[in-house]
Length: 149
Image 1: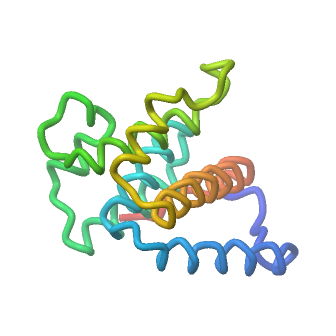
Image 2: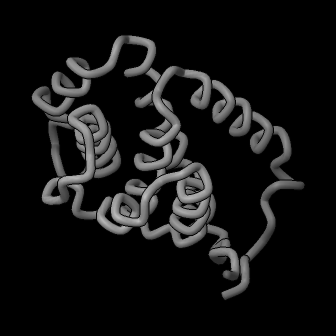
């Protein structure tokens, strides 16, 4: 597959704004491994091969285990995740699949995340979920292909 276009140059100001958002997220206090798991899971849900490849690769380079990467799509049944990571993944799924729940993110999912993260980290989670959803939509729309192995 070939990309429809490279949006970076014609949308440079928007691209720089997205990178600034990523900088904030990376300094938000949420553990790097949790951020990458959230990015990976949301990208799987959205069918963004470009982002799935990128975040699995980045997580692996940062020391993430194969078992955790392979099983993140089935994190509820897999024994490899902490309670904090499970809360973040549940929030990420609920916020990504808004159309599946007319009430939005259910209170029990929000409350579980709020029990595991302080306000600053919870805000970081909300922002990483929003950002990866935006990146997925950009890359799926322009059909950015996953990087070659």
